[in-house]
Image (cartoon, rainbow, N blue to C red; front, top):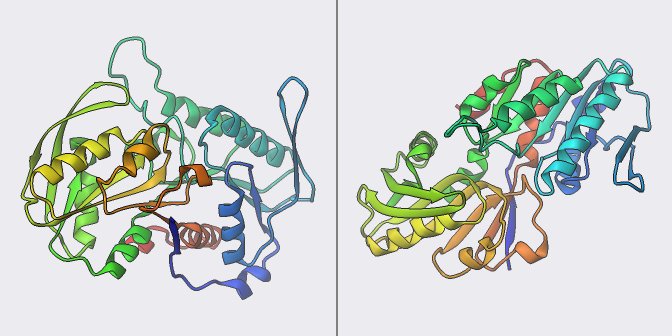
Length: 330
């Protein structure tokens, strides 16, 4: 069975309890994560009514006064992305109309992020479009985790705090006492992410998979740049969707002589046939976080789910107290 692990941070309950201007609300996308964040902060999730009209329209009502409060809305825009994105926009609008002093959208997983530039004619840049929608709805600040590309921070015309799930992943990997490590980027675009990860993982060496993509969700792996023979390879990516890229990378690492192969990612999107691919024996372990909820049907024996609740809770508290967020990752 899959296992769960939580980052060790000390809760700050007494300070939070004395503060009546910090309010936390959850959308319906990942209520369990929101509840964990609330426990870390020593708060209760704010009461809210969410329902649908007969034609599918969403309705949201905040059921307590938030006038003059700093409101944090936790909602990853995962599957079904359109419903959860629309719910987030409606929650933001409801809070603005309820005279909240500041509304922060806490988005553990930012959907529509893969279209972050035009790679062909007549394409939409949906990462920017969604940023415009959230800003237009009335959000004052964004808290996002492991955006698909760092430049998405610049798509927002409001402050954007970008945090990383790597401390949670690194803490878990360190507890396993793995030897002869090499950190591997599954494609050239993830080299910066993998390099930063390797530096914090005992300054491990870096390898890169040279990948040629023929179409969306279809990847062709060509070769490995770097030495992986006889080593424990740790593949690092921001998300696993259909798992085509990371599984092909794992197979090539095996062919190149890697002794063990681990897969690490912050966001477990797990679109079909990801579970079948990931559980096929390519990896010793697949390590992800709970930024996206994982039903039992998407869990398998090699899967380990780490909680980012304490990390998000600490970040929310630091934002609320106007203290440094970046110092958490130094």
